[in-house]
Image 1 (cartoon, one colour):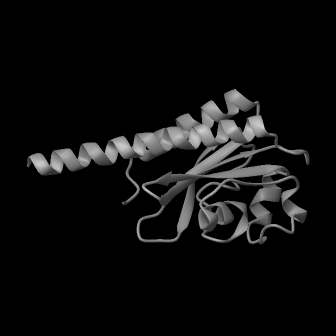
Image 2 (cartoon, helix red, strand yellow; image 1 turned 120 degrees about the vertical axis):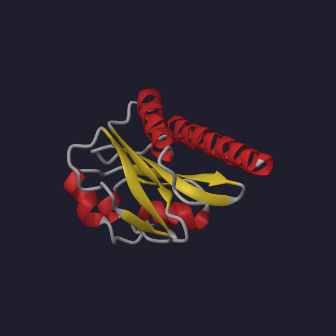
Image 3 (cartoon, one colour; image 1 turned 60 degrees about the horizontal axis):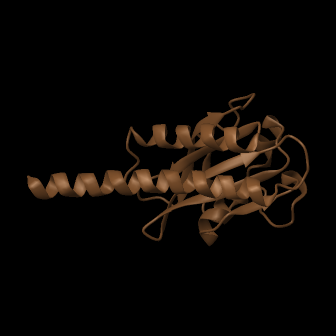
Amino acid sequence: MAVEPGDGGEIRGALVRLRRATGLPVAFGGLVEAGRRQVRISELSGTATAALSALAVTSGNGLGGRAVALSRPCAVTDYSVSAQISHEYDRPVAAEGLRSVLAVPVVVRRRVRGVLYGALRTAQPLGDRTLGAAVAAARDVEQALVLREETDELLAAAR
């Protein structure tokens, strides 16, 4: 499914809820681009720079790409030195001053459709409560996308 103009609002709302529920200073995210194996970061909340804006994250690369490839949440305590991820995106992450980062895929009908990120500017573990809130925010986006798809299908069938 192609990224639609209204999809950004769902991501934006999820990021606000994620920050409110966890106290994380930074959250960002985006949806998978149609026909591509990459997520385009389209929404930023709490960022100090535009370094992450419009960043294309390829499946398997970096933390978000790992979350996409594995279809499950991933987190690192210190992004720049983590041996768990590849480091294609170190420059924009460092420009934003991010250290501890989590990435949670938005999965719709067993397909990853986007990723939500939350981050700290200090290197400290992100606990279960924070991860749980991020998963809940991703599920909110999932449900909104499912609802939109079902509505589109019903409208198409009615024509």
